[in-house]
Amino acid sequence: MQISRVVCDLVTTKRAFWLASKPLRVVADHKGNLDVCVDPIGTKPGDYVITIGFSAARTAAGNPNITTDLTIGGIIDHWDEEIWRN
Amino acid sequence: MKICQVEGTLVATARIAGLQNRRLLIVKERGASGKQVAVDPVGCKPGDWVIAVGSSAARDAAGSKDYPSDLTIVGIIDYWDDQIGRAGGSKLETADAD
Image (cartoon, rainbow over all chains, first blue to last red; front, side, top):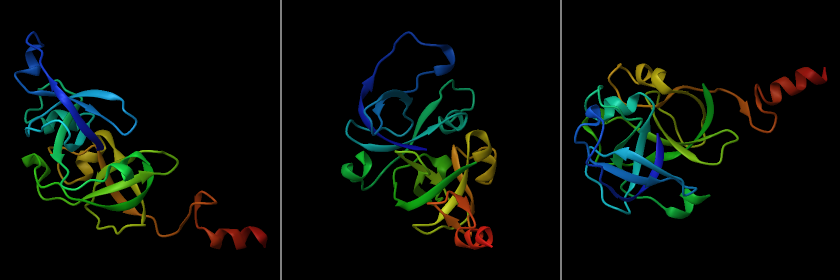
């Protein structure tokens, strides 16, 4: 699992069937690279989160049929940005 | 499997139900810059050198096929000298000198 920060919400009305109506978020890693992930929890921009990748992301989304390769697994309670950058 | 060093525990109260109440640790892969989060079924402490499995093997290692983990710790390395970059450390060093 990776540590990321939620950047913003992402809206896609026209989407693949098995992406269903899952909410999407844009997240940034410690280098600033952006990724899109499914959000089953309900996070807000600025939250530090754990993102789950690979095939575990599909299970984490709540249904193994969901076509995702990155899903938010939890919101980190306390996190120091300086530790994250170094 | 990857060789990682444990940096500390991670607290995440708001989490998906599938993650249950498992212990999560911040680990740093040997030679990599970024930090990662791993599920810990073994019981490690900060500073330990551990081996961790990734992708779908991580789900089985965490206890069940349905567990949503992509990095799980599977063992603590007994002796590890990071300068030499191999298991054994000073023990092997003296063996070589002989």
